[in-house]
Length: 409
Ligand code: CTP
Image (tube, rainbow, N blue to C red; front, side, top):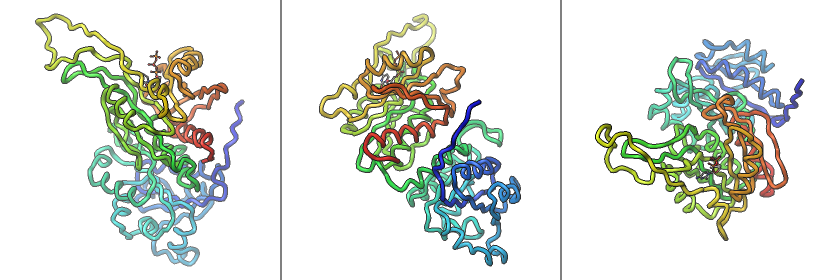
């Protein structure tokens, strides 16, 4: 039997959860439970459309509070007006945040209770977007979100994968536990990494063979991007140097897009000096020694033979710097066997302070997936963490980094 003790990280916190009308609304019921498990009290507001997906009764039962649905409800107004409702919360969470409610919030419309609350509040707002991939990619949605972020609205997700509409792509609402982690961060009163600079590498590198072909790998960038976002939320001025991925650049992070290992190294060196470097990228170990100017054709020359040269090791280069070596250098070790032994050797060989080791053998589903099981290897020993979402791993790692810089998240 395994016993889990949930940290009461949200004790006394009052969350106003706005459920908008999307299929992901069913996950919001679980979110209510997860928030309450951590000590938060939750009041729920549902849009009219949301009530087609989940019932106010279910939300009321789980939150143990009345659910509010109407802007002009005599009962609600006598018990609690909408201004009070929005002000008597520590944080407003919109999950799922549909394209419609994001547009209303960006424009400042106040035609229903949910939109009015977002306009009337003076409290922080966290949105968890969820919608069809085409709606998500639409410039209108992206512009609305950019507007909201520029006003300080926090965003968690969306992830990408199979969508309820049958399509595949971005737009899947963040998992309830990721939203809880984002709630905790949004309510973080101090920013322990304020004044620190952090550099994070993420994603794969693509090494060209000719103008149309390249050698790459399956890294999604999810973990590295999440770490950059978590460090930034704790106050670090964060630079994310990323190879090609489908992950959106986290808000507030300085984002440098690169393709090859050598470009990644140049971008990293240009970012120095930093206090913290986290190398989470899956850098290609080799590149073709010559890149053909024209597309290599079948036929005449027979099967092409590629000759490889080794790429620079970015982690080892950063860890081996002299006066501008970051105070803390963290590497990753993606292993498929003898995880701890290989990772320990890697820490020594590359001169990193910490190595975050994970098992990426296909059976674990780590590569491209949302869950990660990691071991943090330091000079003091090994700390094995339970399986968690990549956002949770990122938040925990950022917290541990903050702790060694003298603050606690
Ligand atoms: N790394 C790097 N530059 C490289 C190769 C790796 O910065 N050219 C970094 C990765 O970002 C990661 C760590 O080194 O933080 C370990 O990466 P990994 O792919 O596990 O190790 P490799 O050096 O490729 O070793 P091996 O392939 O032998 O496991």
